[in-house]
Image: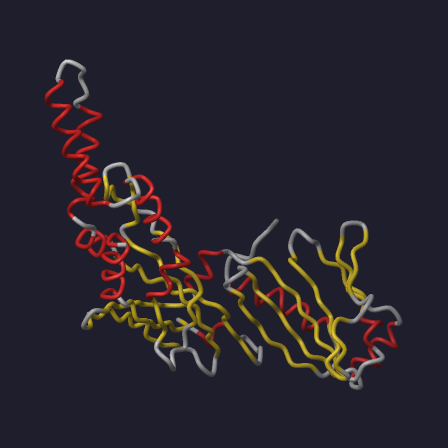
Length: 313
């Protein structure tokens, strides 16, 4: 399946379709960053040159290669009734657009989607996320701006970038290290020593280590260390961590998702944990609003308190 690698390619393809359709219409281009798609949309008034063009030619259809085109949609705008049945169908492994099916409507929309190169989509926008320390929290100042919006239009009335992602790396290793109880750290080191130093002839040493472990188990409570650490991994799941993230009201950004960063550290002997969480927010940009800004708060103080509370329970 082919992808379009730059704005020029998308504009040229969209222009060809636009020139092919005769009549009064309004063209626009949209970039869907969530799905890596470039989408050409046109709204056509049927009772204009368009209906005369179709009636004169008799049969107006266009073929698209599914390897080049992600999807083709035709929908009624006036009267509104959703997708127009039969206007798009597949035949002989080709997508067929049949414009004769739209003549019963006053206005219709055509949408053709193309796969876009992911790296090029990233290059369309300059973005930043700058952390700023607050009391018991961190504020991330998010921004995104179209680099060269007007070079993207080339005669199109609208250009929109949807769901552009800005990812903030929220560092949590220090919060974890500072708030895990000392007896838990000692237990992990002790069990590592028992495995490393095990020798049946060192009876006294083994007995002393076992006594120390028994005392630490008392401090740990009913659950064994492995169970507690497995529960802690659940505590750090991204879907739980987002409870410590909020977007400040009035932000142009929407919180999208949260993931463990690719960099891990060995926090408790046998357990590896993420050094950071990658928190992604998304925004929309247009020619009328080529820049977006917002603020995201990471409640580091609450996160630290909840780690302490977790091990105390």
